[in-house]
Image 1: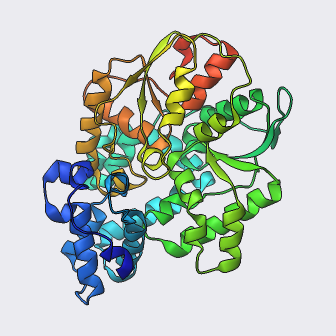
Image 2: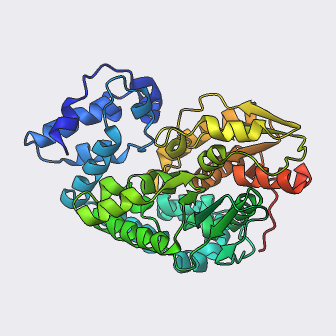
Image 3: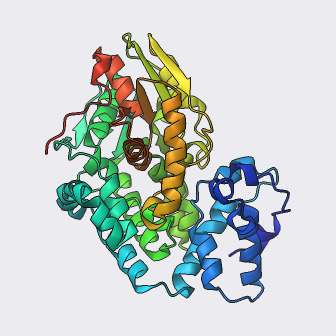
Length: 418
C-alpha cells in the first residue's frame, strides 16, 4: 500500500454516493474513504484483522470513486495493492480458500472452462441445493448462460475493403467460451470496416481476474504471455471487446513496473476497446436500418476504469432506426465485478436486483452490454425477478446486425445448444 497514494485522499466524501457498497449499507468502512483510512492504519502498523480484510473484500473495484474524486486519488492502484496484501497476510477460512482455488483453477483456463460449461448450466437445476452447500457454488450455477455452439475463428480475417489497419483481437476466457458469437461479430465488424484481424490461436488469459483479486505473480505471468503473443502478431493495435480485460491490459506497464524491460514492452502495446477503436478509425461500411430500441449498460471497467462512455453511444446512435435509451443509475455497478459475484454473492445479488429493476424500467427491446460478466449478472438478476430471459447483445453484435442488414429480432437470440 503506497503511503503517498493514501495521503492523496482528503476524505471529502464525494465518493460516497457513487460507491455501490456504501449505497447498499451506509457503512463508512465500506466506502472508498473508509477503506483508505483502514489502509493508512495498516501502513502505520495496525495488523490486518479479519474485519479489515472483510471491508476490503467487500469492495467491488468498480472505480466509480475514481471518476467522482476531485483530488485524483488513485483508488484503483490502492485497492489492487491492498488486495495483494490481503492475499499474502490474511488467513481465509478453508471453504473460502477452496472456492477461490476452484475459480482460479477454472476461469482463466479456456480448456478447463470449456469442459465445465455444460455441468455449470445443468447445475442451474440444482441451484437451491448448491446454494445450501455453499453460496458461491449456488451463484456459479445461477449465473451460467446457455451452452453456445462452438465458433471457430481463423487466425486471420481479411479486410473486406481497402485495408485501413491491422489489428489483433483478444478472444478472452469467459468471452471466448460463453459468448463466442461476440468474438465472431467483432471480427466481422472490424473486417467490414477495413481491418485485417489477427486472432492468435494460442492466446491465453490476459490476467484481469488475477489482477483484480490480488494474485500479483499470476497476473504478471499472464500479462507477459499476452504481450509476447501480440508482439509476434505484428499488429497496429490490440482490440478488446471485454471491459475488464481491456482495463487490465491498459495497466500492464504499471503491473510490470518492477520489470523495466517488460514494462517498456507493455507501454509499446497499443490496446483499445472495440468502441474506442472504431470511433477513432471512423466509419467506412454502410449502416443498414435496424429498427430496435436498446438500453445501453455502462460496464464499470469501461466507463470508470477506461473512460469509454461516449464512444459506444456514438456508434449505436449512428445506426438508422435504432433508438437508444439510458438506464437510471448507470454509474452504479451491477454486482458482477469480475469474480465478485462468486466471492460475495449476497452483496452481488442485491446490486444485481437493483440493476435489473432499472434495466427493465427502460422498456427497451434489447440490453446492450460490453462485458461478459455484466451480461451474465444482469440476465441472472432478471430471471430471479421472475421476468424470464432478457435479450442481451454486445455492441459488436448490434453493429454486425446493422452492417449485414440482419433482422432486429436476431439480436440477443444467439444460437445455442443443450
